[in-house]
Every structure is written in C-alpha cells, then in structure tokens.
Length: 302
Image (cartoon, rainbow, N blue to C red; front, side, top):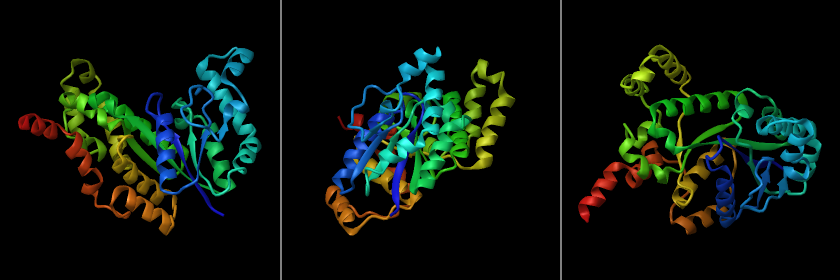
C-alpha cells in the first residue's frame, strides 16, 4: 500500500516543529492517522508526541562529546549515522501502517544545499515506498529586507535542486507581516509569486553598501529568474483556511488521494469544498487579511 508524508525542512526558527504539531492535529481532525517523526537530534523541546525520535538512536550531545565536535559538526555526524542505520528508521516506520508521516527535520541548511546525507536518507524513504513532498519553511521576516529575501530565494532554489523531491516553499509566520508592513517595499503578492526581481535590485542600489555589489546581486537575481521555480505559499499556522490551502497543494504535489469521508470532514470543518483554486484565490485572502491596505482601511473605520 502506498504511504505518504511530508519532509519539513527550513532554516532554524522558521517554525518546523510548530508546523508539525499544528498540522498533525489538523490532519487528524479531518480523519487522517498521523505519525510525527523527529529526525532532528538538536530538538530536545518537542511540543508533540513523536512516534519515532532519532534520540532513541543517537543523541547530539553524545556525538559532540565523544568526537569533540561543535554543534554543526555533531549534527552532520548524526545525519550521517542515521544514513548508515536506515534499517533502524525503516523498522520504526513499519510499526505505523496506514499513517501519514510528518518528518521534523534539522534546521542546518547545509544538509539541504550540498551535504548528501539528507538527500540519501530521503532517497531510501522513497525506495521504501513513501510518497514524499518537501515543505520548505522560510520566515516571512526575510521579506522586510531585499538582501535577505534574495538570500532566501537562493536557499529555496538550491534546496529544491539538491533534494530532488516534489517541493513546496512556504512563507511561514505570514501573520507577522503586519509588523513588517511599513518596511515592505512591495505588496505581499510580490514576495509570494516572486515577481520581477529587478525591483529588488533597485532597492539594493539605494543602499551604498549593497550598491558596491550591483553586478553580483544582478547575477544572483538572474539565476533565480532563469530557473523560474521559486514561489511561496503563505502560511499563518493559526488560520485553518491557510492550513487547508497548503494541505491541498501538498496533496497535489505528492499524489495523495483522499476518500469521501475526509472531504466531508473538510467541508464540515471549513464549510468550503476541497478542490483546485485560481491563483488569485490562492493568495488573495492573505493579501486582504494582512496587507497594509487592510490595516489602513481598519484604521479609517475606527
């Protein structure tokens, strides 16, 4: 029987553990049996009940102390150790038949850009019969700075190419965009749809420091635009409408087919049909909810 799951990846602080906790509850509420798998040995503050925890195989502190490694080196060693002990992980997963898997992964970005352990671990999971989609979380605060946003775009692109999975980029903590609203040069659609990045170059040119690297910035932006692969799904983890839209996108990416019972559960939960959406419907409610225009309108009505 085919089994499905998500590989939750992204930089530290992007909200991976919170995502796994909230999304597991959401999926359970519509009828899925969910197992959350913690493969981050540095995550010792779990807010969910892990079905499988890598700490049962290896602990980051043990790797650091026994091999005299720092946190980054210890984390990479742990992933290499897991890669060599895939039989342990596969045996643990076999105890959860008919479950939908959420893999809470480490936050060290090197593991998804050029180090091969996570790529090989994922390849073994796919060979095992799992239909996986990588969900790459990027904190929305990167939108407040053109240079940081370009960095996030490059990270997303390199991760997509390295992991070789169906891939979805998520702009997490979109509800905090209200805090960044006055510092955003463009509307939310510009960042989610990754529109003409030439405008970002103009913003960078206004800064005397980044202006010195005009040709380098232009080359980086051109690289992202040439591939035309990077867009973002906006996410407020506390908004069930956001969760539903992201669930639909992930299901489409990894080929998950839900039954009529699950569809009825979703309809009862949100009073809306599950199905395809036009592009403006995908992000329009985010723009209406969190854009500066909405804030101004609300202020005028007071």
